[in-house]
Amino acid sequence: MAGVVKRGERRTCPCGSGLPYDGCCGRLHGGADAPTAEALMRSRYSAFAGGDAAYLLRTWHSSTRPARLRLDPDERWTGLEIVDTLGGNLFDATGEVEFRAHHRARGRAGTLAERSRFVREDGRWVYLDGETR
Image 1: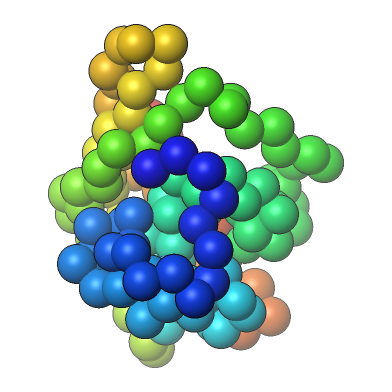
Image 2 (image 1 turned 60 degrees about the horizontal axis):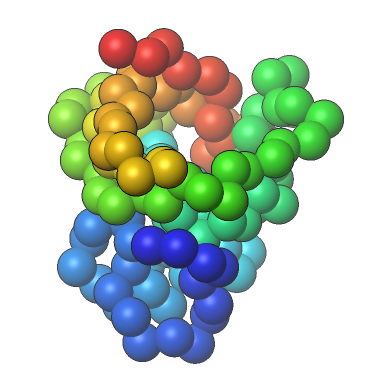
């Protein structure tokens, strides 16, 4: 999905949930808190797919957040698979989500496989770090 996903659009959410964008990741991009680590992971994938670097930075833990983030405009994210989750539910303080994110860049297909760690910071789920597989 190339280009910024806009609130109010009726298209299906890039995260693969099958829900409309506004009823899924669009709510989180608009300021709602993610209820689970997996929901945050999905919303971050959708932010990558839509080119929303500000959201990615906003949902990154303060201790690991880069000063700036430049997204590759030639990279087109084409699908997300959730492989495994550990914790990360409503009453957890930590969680892990293993995923595969598929993309195309400069005519070539690729896959990013990562096990991401999430924690609560000020009561909200944020991305801490990840280990690529």
